[in-house]
Image (cartoon, rainbow, N blue to C red; front, side, top):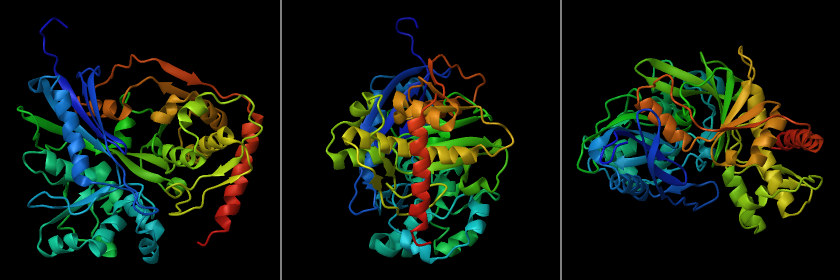
Length: 480
């Protein structure tokens, strides 16, 4: 670039569980600049996870402002937004003021109420592609109606707006105060009909929720308006979910590949050509633009880095990343860990499940057992993802945990597949930039890729078999 030359860029906004990021990419995929602002997660009761809505919004605005202070806003071609799926918020559609916290995707506060509805799981799956779970938005919205007076008052006064976190951010970030929900985020509410690509009147009635308060459902490449930041009018070009964006970090995903994104939670996604029964997994929206709807089979592990954080704190172990980085070759003392942090996701779908170690081991051994529990749960989801017409040839890993060689090597050994970890900085933001750039092919990939081939690991194999047996026993002992 010549001195004084202004580089045009796309602004990718990645609002995640721990931080809000603003990242600038050239239209050809080169990362130019990044800014990050941490957010606080509140845990007022067991099973409750929330963020202050105004503070979360401020974190996004601050990340944008700091980046634009270094990059000329006039050079910004447009922005995209990717958010935590399944997180919801209620707000006043007149003033824009939040009426609830952001209730996180990890939150299961209304699980008991949801279980009492006795919904038909097969019918719900056919409509939404999801499973009955308090992690999704519908039961959280109902909790807000039943427990937050401000929400009830706004509902009575026809001032209520509610829905995915993405919709709240769009409403508050755009000058036009756009009230809209994209397919990837809208579909995680348990209220969205995959076939009709709109809110389901049947499910709204089941949950006792109002369609009038919901955003309009639109394509992810809808004209969302212009960001109300800086002096320039920056168009918001795309909105999608964080996992949907991460899947596209290297462009169009391959049909013979499973994608594992392991961070706060861990997710397995495999592109599909059509919705199916999914064998305990989800049919998830990965793109929903003017060209149509694209789906993936998805498995979810709720307790990934969160499980390691919690167990490290309970063990008073200090930094688990440093400890696991220097793990011993001798694994004879590693116990089994049954991981119920934030409840069990696919394919078990239990809102609560007691965590416990089986066996002793020292602190390092226990932390390794937690890491292995994440891989064992991923492996169960991968096994079900493999039941498809196209053979599964490899795993591409991303997210914070994938930067640990022990995690990737363990995943390769347990799955029997090569694990590839591209040195892609900011997978969610990069995938979002690809979408904002118009989904170009090819999308330049100049990063180094680390490869982990399966190797013989008899001790790990034995622990995996024992973990499977212990999980079966634990699940059989729980009430249905």
